[in-house]
Image 1 (tube, helix red, strand yellow):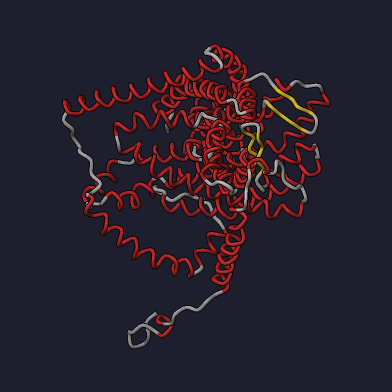
Image 2: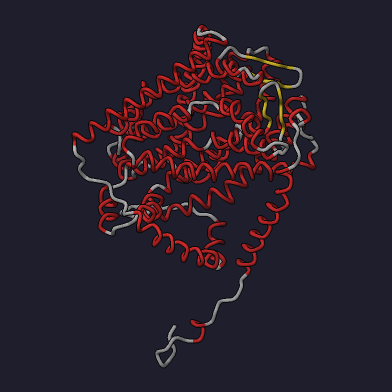
Length: 578
């Protein structure tokens, strides 16, 4: 404000004092730092493999400590997933020859179940940190990381390869360095899909929390303090009351993380949306509003700005973020031939060594047995997808096309998709035993508890994204009934349904590891399938069978993606894109 003489008034020059918002944010930061310092000694406690505890105490008084330990592992795995996404996604999008290797490898990695990674890395981490629980902590965090990273990497990669040409031309004209282009163009353009897929990946990681905190490998079982291991111990003892307490704590954790972290992240990421017209309703978050009203964020960011300018200057000598617009055809073909030949030699050598290892241990005939078991699990996945489609597509369309219903139902669906459904397995197992239902049939329901929500979530997103002018046109022309579904609703939501279907299918394959072998008290149910095969092999430390099972599951998942989902993706992009 200006005074009577034209100069700024005193209020403009006065430094604003601390407000209640600043005190609240400061108290939260101090509490967070204090909690991390209190947890640090327990992460490096003494550990002897032969004397390690197989279970944890089920005293409810320990649950606050267990919850904090589990949250710490989840967020450390999320940080590692973001770093991996940035490095791997940029390499796959910017290096043409590397893309031909990195994308198939990523496709295979996302089809490998969590237990397949655990069987390999647990011993390595224990030997890396001898005599300390830090090795087990690293193995647990790595297991959670493997359930998060792949989906986030695919989302960031697709955002990079689909950048508008105008932005690429602007980066060239402005002579941005590789560092500047990454932070000022690549990350902002991919922030919205990265946040949404990170939220879904974080929710999927809750499902494998028990498996990552209660590690069974090489005939040894190691239990780390956490909500997942608490639930696993309660399930093993058959105490439904303690399982109910674990479910209550998990509900609080899931809702708390969504309210305090993911909802602010979703609302914050809207600043990176590029639209010609502003959306009628934008996501809002009370936590984000408090942070924006606080001046502490600016105080923290101030020294980071000078560090950013220093990095911009330091990276300038490494060159600008340009790639040749035209490459010599002869040189490119020659490089492709040498690169393809070297890659083929490496792949063939690896396959030959793997087949020799399996032949010398369990015999190559084990692959036939594993493929037969995989057919049983494949049948359950197909039944699950058909049932989820018939049930949740109409419900998702109804929710998504009614804004008032969407406002209340979508957060509920996010929580349901994030909740670890394997915590409900004991109640389902008790019902199977009481009703005499075989796990060969019941495992479909157990797999559906964790995988079906992806179909519903994506269908809601697709129905919500239908332009309002198209809805008004259908209403004006009085198009209703099956005709409206066939020519308007189904084509509009088809791309989103494909995304939900491929995510649900991948989640179902991984869920089969814990859904086809269920233990509750003295009841031990096993279904015929590839998931049970891998789970049993992991528990006994049978590495040849683990290799066979993981390979066969990867073949099934990759073949289904290539033969079905990739073609449906192409159909969605070419025919049904709005």
